[in-house]
Length: 77
Image (cartoon, rainbow, N blue to C red; front, side, top):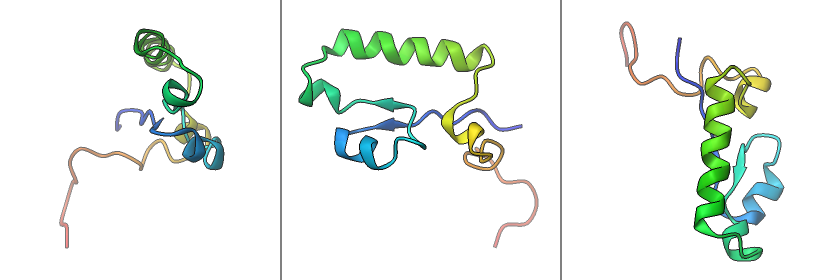
């Protein structure tokens, strides 16, 4: 089984367009003045929740098993 894919939006516009598929908005560092330490804490907390069983947005959408596979089994063309 692949690892959960946790998606970080690099800007608030992207997060706004893709909020249903992005787990964390990093654009608020620029747009809202969120500090890097605060954002790091938020990312760490999301990682802990997902590692403890909460589903990432990809998993909620049903893509959790196919979105990130670090190696491909079988023949690849």
